[in-house]
Image (cartoon, rainbow over all chains, first blue to last red; front, side, top):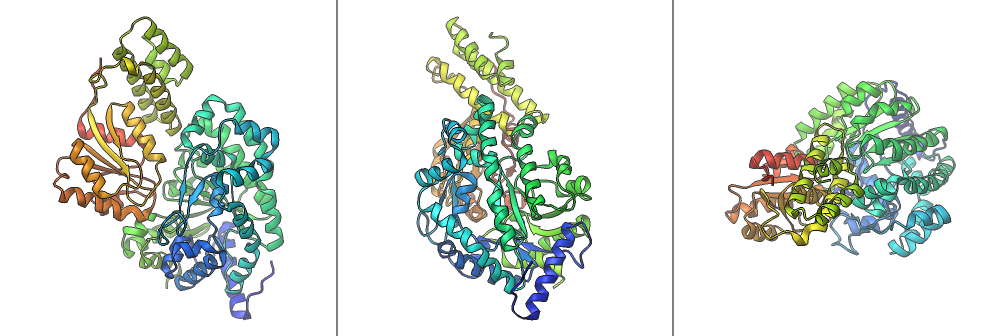
Length: 375
Length: 213
């Protein structure tokens, strides 16, 4: 991995931080527990940037995230930059944007509606996913989302270089997810559940038609730019949402395949899992050993994950968003220390449960960082 | 057919449920009897959820089947026939537009005999006050997905207190980031992490079970 970090100081810092995180992923004991920040909307708030400005250009998003990161003094962040259009690609949904649909200082929100119809499954199967997706984005999402997303992809290499120059490498350079998540967003949860019951073979055929197109371009990009990790996201496909029968058929085979594809490309799969996946944690032993990060949001029992997966994959999490928002620094610090002591010292990265909320107290995030760094 | 209607719904056999309802209707079975059978089916679903055989997917599917089946006999039901044992005013609080979880809660609670007045999304505190004053519910349900909506939950609870409408009713909160700490912060009574939990807590607090016909 090449680095253009200015001066030996930033270069050494980049090596130190990267090695610390890599040790945790490899289930070795680093010099101390790494702490990675999931700061997106929070970064904007912390540096006094409106959400509208944050989303207007990826340069703004990178600048705000980097500035907040340097003020907080952690080891890394989740993403080098941010573009709301990426959410439309993950969940086939429109996003309400501050400054356009919402006041400039209100956070963006995904709007779930039935944009994908039941007949679209046949279109995906017959016409192929790339053609369907392109048409879907332009005709049913619109608002220039396709162009904005393409620009973000083109900007990522430049933003990664910026981070390297400042002595850090974001743990992810891209986000992918399973066909389940995309269809669930596009159909809406209720309609999609009905589809799983009423036309399961059709849904599965459409999912199979999507799979070949998910990881390839992302992994190719990663090889070229020296990207570290890729989020493989799971939200509505959590164990708590679905019976085992549905999860076994429509979720895990696809999730497992994507994770192996990422790992086989030499990139770290970051299993970003929202809601409760505790029921099926043991299944994750089929994933590559000492290559993945299991990142949970506070709903999955991370202590149970330690019992079941502690010798198999790095754990990351899970200071609750509610605690970061309405709790006290002492509460955050004590819980963070508990995580470090019970889930570490090897194979653990301290992180918030999912993103640090936009309105988290700065002193609480500082307390979380201090629990790991001792500063 | 009438005898195994609850089991058919409990097993989520949609076409069989609808066929059974059609047959019962044809045979002159009273709509109220059909409704009672469907509600017993929902109880089977609830028990299977508690035993972790069923999950949210099955709760959603059961509610869909229930609503389709009730739709077949709705016109035959008298105004007082759909007895309920509790009332809830429910909404996603101000400045939050997420409603998927809230909608599922509304549907499942209605299927289980609770009269749900769903105010939708982005509901300001004063609208909650207005509707609570109108309907005098047993429960007020506040939903959010954004942590930035916590303060609006708090303002809603405070608005109910100021209006003299807080006493004697239970404020329940739900949504992704909600936990006991958030519940204490906003001044709610309980928080629920699942739709079944909201139903169970409502039953526990109200002591309610609908009359079986």
